[in-house]
Image (cartoon, rainbow, N blue to C red; front, side, top):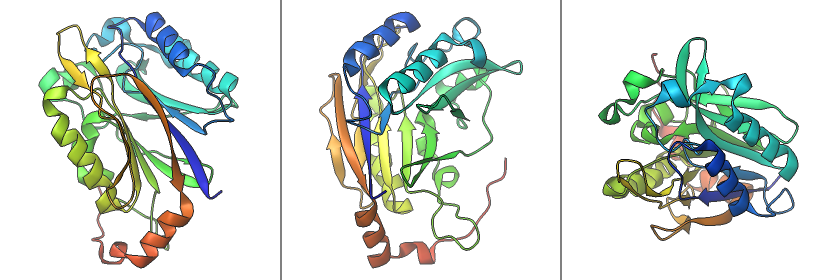
Length: 267
């Protein structure tokens, strides 16, 4: 396929209220379905906000109402749904990004870099596996919020005989307004250095501690140019397009990947 349609959803989340947030998101999405988009991207912890109350809010994956809602939405809308939720798995709590397909298949990525300034490293377990999924011929790397600050973890790591590991990076976040400039800068930097599209989806509103979130959800192309760049402090839904031909032509015209350093990442 030459194109993939990606929908960015920037909501004002309700604190630790999965039922209210799922209802809010369902209303915000309206009649959006597979005729309009191939993928709907929700923020980090879309059901609760960025809660450190993992012992109360996390549910086992197989019994999670938020995971079930995401799976049901993918099936009813006929497109992929993704976002992260707090889950309990094998006795540990994870900030887990779920990739739900219309046929009911679930793939997940556990957040690698835990935001210690909020004590996330004390309330959740660290993931140790990079996850790349496929959508209409595009390969997408799954990432969550604070991961964005760590370029080595996110750097292209192609297999032998390949030039690229992925074509787009998805970053779902609850990134506060006081640090909005790093968010915007890092989204563009990750796109430029990896010669890929980057999708960053954030929330707006305030959390229980009155910490504000500016949104600034973006779709950035492989040159670091913003294709979607919404004003701060308001909810929105926007759909953009990943263009295979444009990406391939730029990679051929500007083959910086040929000079990239080879490395391995240790756990």
